Length: 251
Image (cartoon, rainbow, N blue to C red; front, side, top):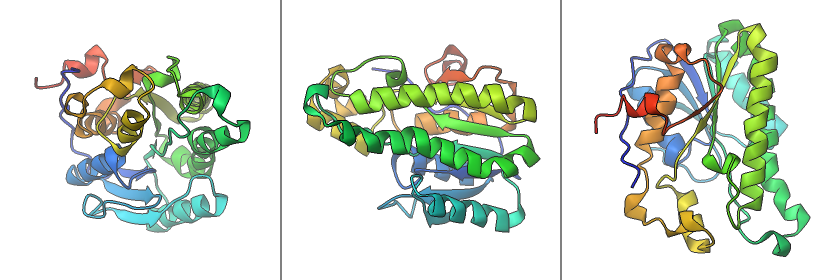
């Protein structure tokens, strides 16, 4: 359906990269790819994790909604050598799925805690290291940040806020040498898509699993952006489906 393939990723030797939401799906695929390309990777996961996929990375539990957990994660990076070239804010949740009239207002809080406030919390905690490296904040995005989808009040609105947060980060931090990129990711074969299919509330839920994008595709684009080649990107808002990335894909 999407006709997408992984892009070639340059050598990442010497790069120090922290990935949140690394336990499975796109996060785990990204960690595996970063390690394979020579990066020093710190992988924070919440709940169950595919530890085989995270082999070669420094791994630790990480709850982006908890300041102490975030501080501990940043402490591990600092102890490694006091350097961080890229922060990948990949942690995200879609729940609750349901029509907004049937959702309590308080039920929306977790999505904002993870997708927006957690993004801010991780970024601020990592900023001293990022400023030293004059490098990159890479936020995992989605088309749902700009397109209303039935049943996704929590996800669409929180990701829209994350998109604006990314623009704010770039506006205020780029003069200090820290770039920000918000990368839109197409429907991908992850556990989140399982939740979406189970709810069956909008066209995305009707996409057959066999037609979903493989996690290696967005992982490769995120890894490319994190490489020296990605320094040529001038935009804050990009998407895996952009022509620039499709041109790199060996279809």
